[in-house]
Length: 507
Image (cartoon, rainbow, N blue to C red):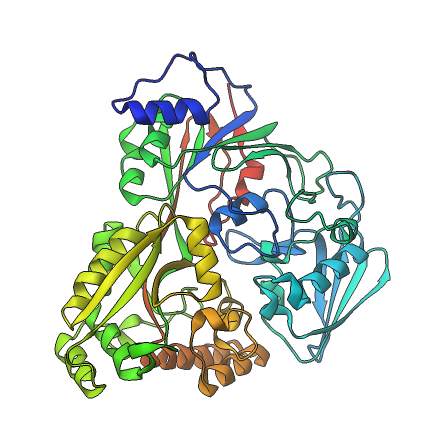
């Protein structure tokens, strides 16, 4: 493999450094997958991470009890079977007797119990804690059985348990306090090394109970410039890549030997408002913002139209037609009238924060929104910041407005209870709550009839878009690119890269 040729010298240097080259390129072992992405993990604790970049890495190393497959069904992971009791207040799992952590230790019910007790411990700061508040106690009657005793029926609990935020980690590692500094999981790969913002090296977990892994390992290079990723794909220095920028993604099929996989995802782009301070405490001001924003225009400008305008619920089984929701057709006259009624006819000033890198559309979204809100007198200052700084501020709820890309789920309660319930652990980030939202969430949590659940969450969508604490914008796609040596990858609507466990690389 020769030295790559780039038009941009900076891109050449970036690729060379990230791929560990000093002069001539080093040929890769045939069965090793050379991979690249633009945004690195921000931390290694699976219970605490919210950044997609962290979750994508950790889901290769850790496993939950169950996972969501490519058809959005619940599938086995550490657990081989599960069953709710007739009254819905007991959930029993049978663990795979062959499940082992990468050090060879068997995954025991005690590890499951310790993991969920850690998640439920408020001091942990677990990002998905609110999903599991129905768990009253956990029994471990034998070496392969875990019983969750619930305070009430909790239909979405199983979906919540499919997230890597519910990963099972060794009780011994919890006791030793090594979570986040060392990785010890039962997933298909072992994280051998991590050089932040540079590279990760993963080898196969020989003890993985999930079947054969198709490669010997994965070498991941972090290349913030996605044009450099495309250049590395063209020259076969990278076999597989995650692409975030739709402009770069659209260029992939123009290159012989490269294939683009494009998958609609449940994740959603949203403008989050701080409804607890200043002008946005007024419902009419928030409604004016909703009426002033042309969501299709934001989508077209930021994502080249690669997506669709969405309401709060992005999963097909519960999605509401956006045209049925409050002010999804832009109406500047109505927006100006609402501003005047709220006492802000002359507008106000605010700041909107956005992260660099992920999503790459954030800056464009912020700029279009800035221009649109100027039409109703809102002077919006854009604050761009590195992802780790953004996440720290976002988790503190420290913003006037935030351009965000948030994770979707297959169940509405699992997706939103941490924001829109009284006990939600991210309610301070949502900056809004009311009795109607909390009540609808609780009704949807316990209702078992699918048709009735759909009605409940349709009402949730209608109400939350009318009170407008957030302005939902659109959903997009996940993009992966691969050369002809790579086969076997299946994309997932959740954005998961777990499918890498089935990939093979030919000579």
